[in-house]
Image 1 (cartoon, one colour):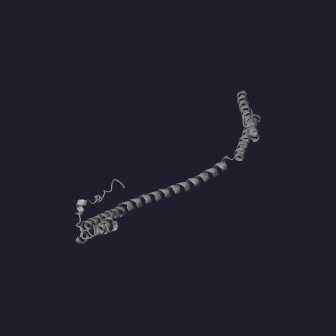
Image 2: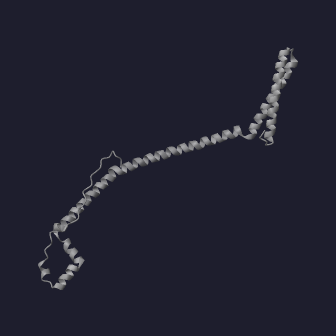
Length: 193
């Protein structure tokens, strides 16, 4: 139970019946006239004694009091269960169901995003596609170095421009051969070096 709900006091516990409360029962006159053996049989027969006790007014009133207390306790417990515990249980149950629903939606969204991620990664980063992109880079690098050579032949250049162009060409070819070697190693599955 939550600390917000007021506690309903339960009835006091029932105290055991004492001998003084029973008001020692007087034996009927007929029992006094019984022979001793028959009287002893009566006293030793538990069922006869219980039957006699059940007829006593003190026993009947105590039994009635106990039944009333048990009925009060039962109705208090029933009202506590119906008015407090069941609504709290239903509230907690609804919250749990809502969280399960939210988690299910999040899990489904995660699975969808994971699928999209794998599809994107496989289409973007598969080995053949990466090799193809790397070949394109090498081809572009080769074209750039050839263009540098064409520019030298096409116009008159100063010595300084020629030195710069040759240095750029040398750097471009160095990059081209470096990348070409990397691609060869990659295709031969030689990764090191």
